[in-house]
Length: 247
Length: 294
Image (cartoon, rainbow over all chains, first blue to last red; front, side):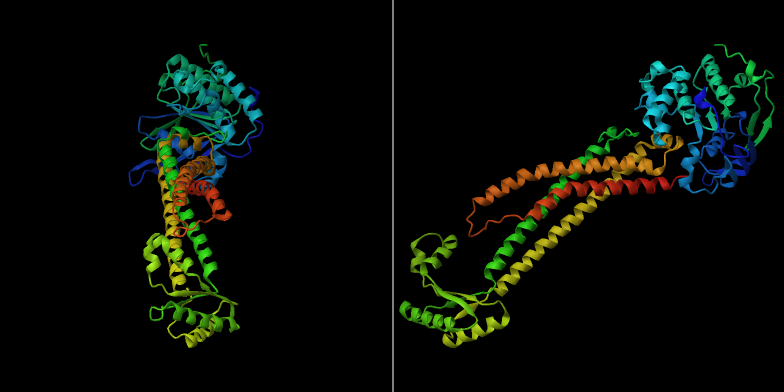
């Protein structure tokens, strides 16, 4: 899809780089300890590990909802550990986040939810109309553009959320249990969207508990356990281009 | 609000009706304070203008004899008319004196029988302590029993009262302003808590703090102005009622006063001032709250 194709990534080096990162809440124990990790450009990773291992915490560091309590974190080559708060919005605009609970704004239509990042960025309304329509079409929800999230199914909500996450052509897509609230068929369709985005040039990280789903894709796993991360090889051998999404 | 898209469902906010109502009450109180202050200012200016440069001379009744008194009055007027500092000096007719007493004593024969002193109105060429002293000395020489009132003590006390009203009005304005500011601070904090999740989403999709603050500020501006207009809408009939009640009082007791254009300008500015104060307060409150994040 032309809209999502990357022209210029605008930075050199890894999309995300963590160097000895530690994270703790207040005076509690460290949720993450000495995590060093590099997410290359145009990569695809699953993020796995038992509940409470720190998957959500690791992702929230990457979308700048939290900052490391120690160590260094670079996003798009920019050191965000000590960057002033006023810098963060610009970096957040270059990444897209999908949550298990969708986090759509219930008082807005599907269209307005998807349009939100563009409007916040001050994009001209004609461009907003065109791009959002195109994206809703891509996720197969063009006929639901005026629907409010309350009337949409879980799968539909998640497709709106994915459209919102990618509407500003992010170079990094972070998804926290995106298939956690939908059935397996819908999960595969959502995964298809993520794989397409990856093919179009974005780095994708998907945190998930869904082992069978992970096993169907030839993507490496970032495995978190006890606050430490290790990179495990893909569970599937099939090239991404040959995956049957069962559509 | 104002046709501008809002990303926050602020209209569903529970605090906003309360804020509107409170701004209305505050602007109503502020406009009353402004009006009372203006009215008293106008009244005192009129009095001030009418009594500066004038003296009132009282000649007590001489031995209960009106003719003897009239002779003293004539003598004093003669002295005054030849005095270089005096512009005009004339006896106040007895009819005028009884007229002046009527509002206080009623319209009856009692006044006619009273042993009233004779009064002389004196206008000076120029107002000033030197002229007052010189004229007073001449009168005392001609009629030692004369009582001279240059209205200064009376005027300074009345002016003191006016200043007192001014300070009270200012105090009301300060209280109203701080009440409005505090209301907006707490209502904004309540909204921030109510919409914490929406605000998190806005941040995730790239909103700057200033963007979020502007949404609250715009809402506060609208609330301040709407509440202010409602306050004035409440004030208008209140003023009309008081003006009507005042018009039924004898003008000798409660003089009529035309409020100056500045008074109406200040009143018209109150909703604007309330709106801008609310807007600034909301903006600063949101910025400060958000800057404590990450």
